Image (cartoon, rainbow, N blue to C red; front, side, top):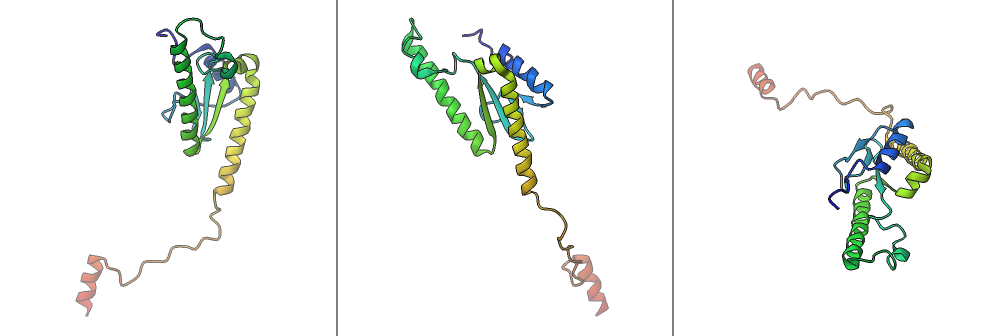
Length: 162
């Protein structure tokens, strides 16, 4: 397990290249819960590249025949990874992030579909922010300063007048 890379895997490089070619500029390993592989910060989109093995693709059917040695260790390990993934998803969503988790086989077979899903989410995020921002027109100008202000220098000058 010491040779398993935390970042820079083949699937991560492939998806990163495809995102970049689509014009999406991202941060890698951004410091939010779960440290997503890619983060589009302005749109609040977190992207994870999950390997089929470590994150338990088709875990319900695969768990029966998957391991011949040290079975209890691997089952606990992968189930803990899956719990952590769900926990990270919840935390990020509470913070207002859209979370994408792409499986290894999705990235290998059709990274274009992954990129198009992210592009749609980015457009949705832009639409939401444009709706929320109020326009500046119609606002009242701030009132001018009260002549009887509580400023120390102003109060001193008034004392001399009267």
